[in-house]
Structures are given as C-alpha cells and as structure tokens.
Image (cartoon, rainbow, N blue to C red; front, side, top):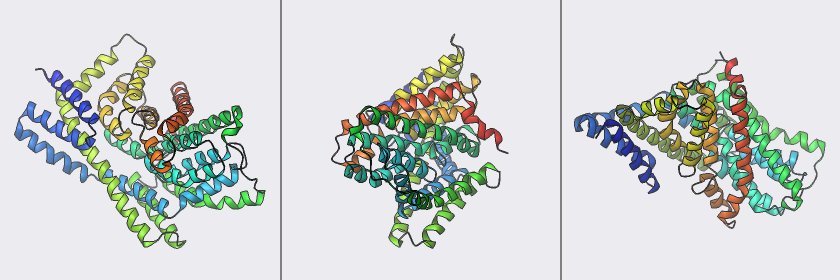
Length: 433
C-alpha cells in the first residue's frame, strides 16, 4: 500500500470514529500513533507520542488559552454578562424585536472577553431567554438569535479558534485578533438587520418592551464600561505592540479579577468554579491540539496534504472557484464536527492550498472562522443549538433550528462580502507594528 493510500485510509477511519462520538483529541492521537508506527515502526511511534504531548502541554504559546478562558469565566461568574444585557436592553428593548437585538449586542460585547462560542451561547441563553419569554417573544426567534449570536464568541477577539489557527499556521495571533474585529462588527450588524426584517414582516414575533428615558439610557452605559476597559487594554496593548498575546491575556485575566474583587461581584464559590471550568475547558482544548499534532505528523509523512494542495492548485479553475470548493467542504464538515475539531483536522490540508493559490493567511483564517461559525448552528450537530436547547428545555429542538435559518443567511452574506472585499479583515492588521 502506498503512503498516500495509507493517509487516505487514516482520514476515512478518523471520520468514522468521530461519528461514533469518541473524544476527538484521543481519536486523532490514537490514529496518528498507529499510522506513524505502521509506516516508521513501533519504536518511532512510541517516541512520537510522548514527545508531541510534551511539546504541546509545555508550549509557552498555548498558555494564552487558559488565560483568556479564565478571563471569560471570571466575567461570567461576576455578573458582567447580565450587566451587558441590561445595558443593551435599556438601549434597544423599547423597539419591536428590541430584546433580540439587545441579545445580539450583549453577545458581541461578551465575546470580547470570552473567546468561546459555547460559553457565550450558554451564558446569554441563561440571561436573555427568560426575559424574551416574559415579553411574549416567539421562542423560535429568541432561541435562534441566542444560538447564532453566541457564535460571535469565536470571531470577535479574543478567540480560542484564532489562537489555535495562529499556532498551527505560524501566524501572528495579535494580527488575527485585529482581523476579527471589523468582520465581527459587520456580522453583528447583519444579525440586527435580520431580526429587524423578520419583525417588520411579522410584528407579532417580537412585541416592543417598555420605553426608557434618555437619562436611563445614559446611566445604562455604565454597564459596558468595564467591558470596554478590558477590551481596550487587551486589544490596544497587542495592537500597539505593548503586549504579546500571552501578556495581553494575563493582563486581561488579572484586570477582570481585580474589577470583580474590587466591586465585590464574585463569591469565593464563584471564583473556585471559574477555576474548575477554566481547567476543564483548557484541558479539552490542549488534548485536541496534542491529538491533532500527532495526527498531523502522520499526515505529513504520508504527504496527503501536500499532494492535495498540488492537485487543487493545478485544477483548471479560477482561484475563487477553488476557494468556493474549500468553503463547501467546511460547510459540509461543520454540520458533523465541532468547530475546533474541524479546524484542527482541516487546516493542515487546506492551508497549503490557500498559500499555493496566493490567498492572504490572515484573511483565510477569518474566512475559515466565519464558515466554522455556521457549523455551530447547522444540523445535525449544531453545538450552539444544543447548548441553547439545554438551557431553554421547553423549546423543541426543531424550533431552535428553524430560528437559526435566517441567521445562516446573514452568515453567508458576511462571507460573501469578505470574499469580495478582503480589506475589511486586513485593514486593522495592516496598521499593526
């Protein structure tokens, strides 16, 4: 059997095992070890396994993950997420569809200190769904909005997906973070427009809430000041070259903890729980990264990624059409795989293709993150949909999927705009030192 055939068999077995709901990190590590040992011998495989695990878990670059996760967890347990929603509610709640619009705004703001799509969706579902239910919102619209807007957690920095992409492709994490800001704002605006158009067509979906005075609106702005401060410190420090991404993560985690303690907004139990959740989430990410590293070494010696890149690069198609094929692969794969697992599995294959076609690696990262955002709300996996379903409880799963369909259209439009105008993603990174 040729090396290429062995690599293809490994990919097929990987996909089959992922459908069996086995943990993706362990699956990739196991298949990578078996495949590498089959080609190079058992001794080589036994050397590769602990070496790659050690390299990942001792990597200084990956310390940025637990620090940003910790920042988001402290923000959640100190009540920042509720204050963000309360501020957005005062600003938008009196309009038709205002609570859903406030949910998008709060999700976008919380994404700036979270970095996880699942955490953003779970947090905002807990805070916003009872309010929208109280004001007789259509629960399909309400749950679909939370599930879709929660996906902003992996686009608006800090983003765990951007961190992993940057490490895999050796790109600047700071530039990737900067590249996600304008597309994140654009996508938030498209979500707001989607809600507005739905309610314009059918006002009964989202009746308006009580009106608020100008003084109340001004006073509500205090609820977002701490988030703005955190975002300015973390992103501003990286943008102007004051901090490395790891240092920025440490500053952000320290600052959010100081704010929570100074304002007496977090209990000892909440602090311990935030540490426990940070450990669990960080270990999950690190195991996936380690497994993908081992599987990536197996793929490298089979040369499947490089041969695929050569084959795709030589297709008699314009490069935009080839990018369209890559996007379709991600759309299909995202229906069955977690966003992080999808990135880990496919980047070693498609990143060389994008480089061979001459696409900017920072822009490509933003596009891929946008496509994986669609994966977290598309059936049958749709992780965010299941997260919201777990919080909502009494809303049927099919109603939530129905609610996210218009939001999928907004994501497609955002992708199309970025394909036509790549400078939207590249403008801010181009200003960095």
